[in-house]
Length: 153
Image 1 (spheres, rainbow, N blue to C red):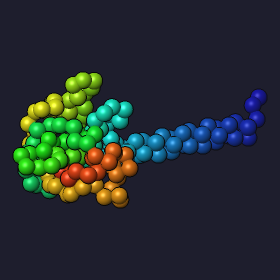
Image 2: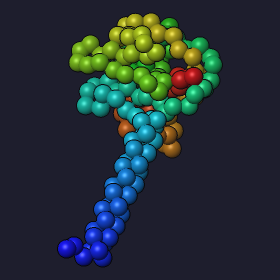
Image 3: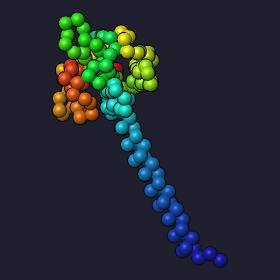
Image 4: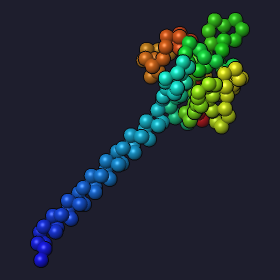
């Protein structure tokens, strides 16, 4: 006959073990959710980086438009007439890319290639500052250009 104390101890160990596994799973899911809402760099091993902003649910509401181009190593808009350099775009949360050549970016269900005209809501914030999330992750050419931050809301 089984010892009742040993049976209770084994049951407690299973309950505690199950609780620890559940707690670990909740923490892991929370980390994945937080990271998926953050800023990120796509296409990291290629010539043209794609900067994607964090999920904000809103943003500035100016209309930005340009021709999709590589701007100092980052995806953005080619310089307009009279401009020395183009504008780096921080694309809205949820933006995806398709590679290899040609690089294609999908924003709100519409896919664009280099040379296509793109219009987005957002606003220009000037060049990246050393305190910006992307600063150390992009080449100097990206840092020297103005940045347009697209709204995701």
